[in-house]
Length: 575
Image (cartoon, rainbow, N blue to C red; front, top):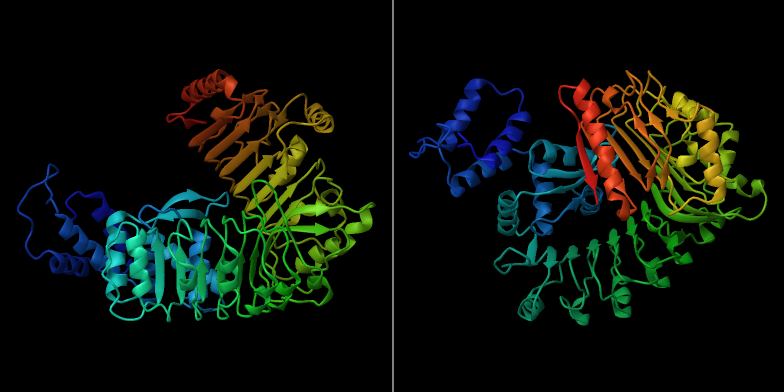
């Protein structure tokens, strides 16, 4: 029926996958309703070639079969330009802010949004292009023809108005409700000026602010979603106008050139998500504490570990009790008490500022213990001094419900309670914790999907080198993976200037599918051929002058694997 065309086949397959209870007769009826007369031109495979119009008919049929709430969420995809890599979290948070998602059957709005996203993946309306280390889709794209259909539907229903980009939408005949500016010239800017923008509830912009909207157009009183991610040309008047959008629920200034948030941000009393990651905003004004509806504060820079300072009022006035995500922050010892944030699901501390003795972080330790008994399931701590992360062993009540844990600093001994984290899915540890005995402990974590050992600095200091040498001495000069355990581990990553000799015995990591190594110097890698389900090995050499070494390692691994496996893993050399 699909004429051998990949898009038609994949889309129809998604349709079939989401209707498992349909009978054969019902499927035949579907086929006849789509194509009562079979095509006249035979394809090479004996099937019928389909025109672009007929493929569009298949896409439309599959779209119309979706539940109403999923259709609404799919129409929202037209906000993004052709070929744009769409972040899963960005998309689902926006759905929530728009009111497309609500709690149901004991699931939070975030969980329901995830199910809608996964439904679109199953339907093949969106296609995954990148995954997070926990196995979830991180970025997706929409096939051009599918997006064309969605854009046409969105325009037809006056759901979204797109200006610029790859689509020529007719000017809206009525009020503009959701506006996506995908790069405009002076002519299109004048067309925007003529539009009735007084009812815009959602505004998304790509590119430069000043090329698309003049200063007096940047006034949208009832906007609930404002997404300026990646936009340049931020001026003072822009922040002034934003602070007048009193109904705003979602504000993303991520990767813009904004330098600070004004005190007037405290007027946005309906704000739920504030995303200022990868900007020069390094401190939140105290007025942020007036925003009692805030659910997500996203700041700092994960790659550079630049962190966001919290206002002292958060501690003093016990504000923002509904926070679920507090990410990319800096904490000064003794300054922050987080006990009142009992809804917190994710706490990501990029920087700890020490103040003398080990007891200075007692309040933070106590907060982690307390919140671990509520909703906390993701904990990230960056600790250059390493004093705090090495004191975590003393927790009397560990956060046993964690599904993701990331600790960075210099840690050798793991917290004793780490073996109790039965739900842990993703674990990131410093390279200094790479020891045979530690791997033995971690092998009992039955739900562990990904395990990473990393070192963030460019080069090792003397102390780190000493630790690595001592770690090897504990197991006869090599780091040996245990023969049993790691029942669910699919991703193993190492990232450090110097990687010690690693050895994989038979039956080690039985489910491992992907191995990633990033290094300047690798002392050795034995037994990769023993990893029975290994599909890919990614090798990245940071020292570009030694590429020949990487190729030699790749060749040796490939030859060893071919001797023992019917299908050798793919060796990928990253640049």
